[in-house]
Image (cartoon, rainbow, N blue to C red; front, top):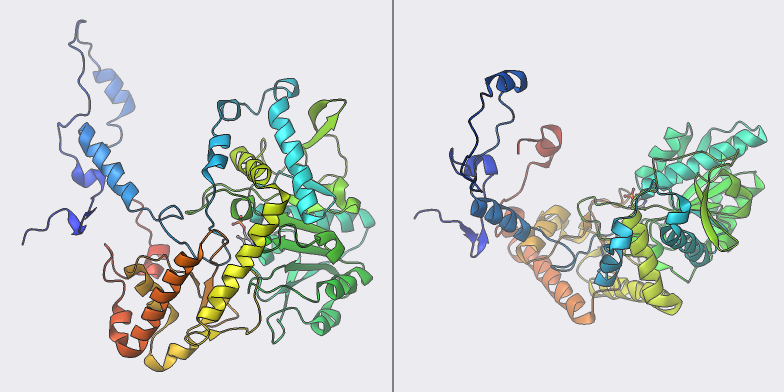
Length: 487
Ligand SMILES: *Cc1c(COP(=O)(O)O)cnc(C)c1O
């Protein structure tokens, strides 16, 4: 049979534009020439042949991009249960606000008096974030979570430099996101891994043993990367402070604790938030982000510049801070992300932000209980916004986490995060988020349970999955080592 365009019903196949083009096709008609033809030979000699763009008609181009757009999967298409990423649904009102002409046409070089509205958004967003975290001062400068970490580590370094103390180690739990040790190392600190306790959280005894006066402090994540709340947080921060150290908190998991945890009271000195995870910016495919940094009073002079100030009814930018770690980049980061967060916070209100966190925790625990008999639970205790399983119970059928994840795709589900955190071999990390309703969760659970049943009854089928996609299993190593960058 001739291979038609349909790979799977009406999911259409589509080649590269270079394969599709035919010499002489054109997407527009030129008006008839009414001036003498000019000789461009000299220009061609000067410019060369130019890039080899394919010749295409208008409908070739329209169909190409429309077909590609139907291959996308996002939270607007279906559940996106990636743990450690918070892929929740983001209300469209926030997109609408970020797209208002007054926002999209504002220019970063306009003087303060012509930018009062945008400055007010930044000023108020800083206040909201301080309030939500319990911290004293906020900078919106970092453009991603990882840049927030880097800012925090630079603040640590600046603090000890100012005090004239030489410290070069930093404690980081073995469950941490990979960016944590990377950010610390960029500031010259040697990461010292802390082994998690048997229950997946920080072991106070280990922290006590490792914290000394050559150590700048600790970089922890709360709730941590296993989706567990660090219950001994107050003891840990006290130990670090007693040795003159500082405490950094990676706040990427804020979705579980908005309006619930006061980080300053927990003893945190610096933390970052990922606005694109917790505060409503779609970020699949590595889209733009913002990683504001929140600090306690004693560290506020070290925050990056410019700072947004408000005095006598006027908003303005301030650059003159001798202790500041300086600028992180030109201008103000991904401003649209800040607008979405501002709009999300205002449209939700304090009570609903708290409720969103409570529902995120409820949904994760619902999923955790639902799989109790069919998947091995890495840490059997109530979780926060995400839960971690492993493929231990499927080993006897020679079925792995990857096999189950690929089979989920056949059933129309984006797989959860797999093989992370590294401390759980064969990890399956599910973050349902607060925006999935009970019917959708039940459907996801039912499908996942079918896949688990298949592992027992027809493991061969799982090892072949996915079978209903355009492409089957990809050679991920080759894709990373020898990427094909044509087209
Ligand atoms: C996502 C994430 C980061 C990094 O944030 P980016 O915005 O992707 O740079 C750091 N830590 C944790 C726990 C995360 O989940």
